Image 1 (cartoon, protein in one colour):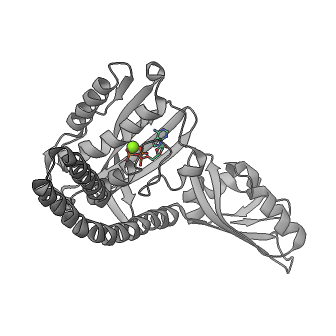
Image 2: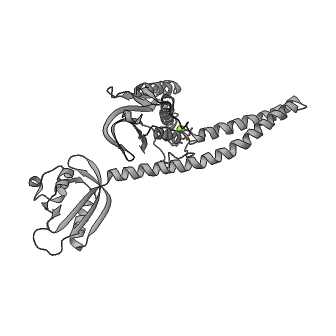
Image 3: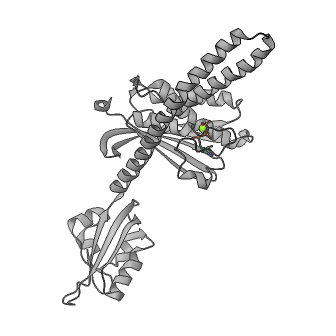
Length: 339
Ligand SMILES: Nc1ncnc2c1ncn2[C@@H]1O[C@H](COP(=O)(O)OP(=O)(O)OP(=O)(O)O)[C@@H](O)[C@H]1O
Ligand SMILES: [Mg+2]
């Protein structure tokens, strides 16, 4: 767009009209501030470029458009120096939401792959000698002159088993999907029943399902595990005030939705929202990493496993949390070409 010295619009190209959902006849003469409902930097940047007569660039600026759409844009403002005609500033807006989302997804996936590689190496190094330790303890138990001493070999065997189970959990889900055509609501309901029972019927689980969601290919056991891990966290965060705990399960379909760099025709979106205390701020940025926990006795694997499972389905898992509202959202592609 081009603006005059009073920041009124003198020209807006077709891409600008599409983004701002206006037409040139309607917007010419309007003040630049009227096109955008909320943006901390927009008018400031324009005024600054005007006053200093130097180009001005801002990246990833959040804007609320008059259409109600929330977008992130890169802004490039170039003053026109010759002063001829009404053109004073040329402003270029580049929508970067898609790019930002792709790089966030890639970062998350990369972090996950790195930690998995480390864990796989470590698991191998632990499990081999552990098998030996357990076997030797079993042999020793048979040779003991005094049966009372078996208490000690039992401890060795039990602790070795515990360590093996931990390593197996660290390794995460089976890499293979056992996918079949399923109704996602059946899975959600199954977990809802489990969680209600686990809480001794104290927690309220609300449902807001879109009944028109079609069946799609997914791995029932693994998705149950993922949803259970997320919901169980909500329960544990709310304890011991389970009576005040409220979890909402929501399902929606979304058309033309991008996961990572792939545009999907149809995507299933599931929200799991709780009204608990929220994820501690210092954990929030790393909450999906393995062994990150804020809970006494927690192993910090639940969310890491849930994330691996959603990734295996070609989906994405996101989290947003503040006191009183913690939301986990996952997206699963429903186009059968991805089955
Ligand atoms: N809904 C939630 N509300 C508040 N905090 C949460 C919520 N979900 C996760 N957290 C925080 O994130 C941490 C990590 O969760 P995660 O499920 O990965 O591990 P964990 O629950 O500690 O252990 P594990 O699931 O392996 O038994 C939790 O310890 C908790 O502090
Ligand atoms: Mg957990």
